[in-house]
Image (cartoon, rainbow, N blue to C red):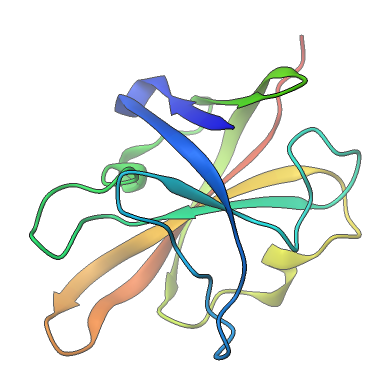
Length: 142
């Protein structure tokens, strides 16, 4: 699986990820993006497909989702799957305080959507980033 956000020059491999004991997503290396296996698969009829990745690496280099906070409504996110490509249209961009992502972000009962998550806000070397950036997208109409 892969993800492309052309407006941000993002092209990354997507790998399945689970959650750690503290409930946080176990993110892959900074150049890749994780797909939360507890959520919907891309293209499902219901639920949220959650993709998450690093904004940067420990050495300061850019992660796969470095520019996510610059995405705009109407931008497209393309997911390459074994069944073929899927296109989503960005409808919202939100910032949430670190460790305060809304529970409904992970809801699997509602209409299908995509949520792409990375870190944002100010950075403290002892605590990390102060917030999370979430881009919400819905399936694009053909």
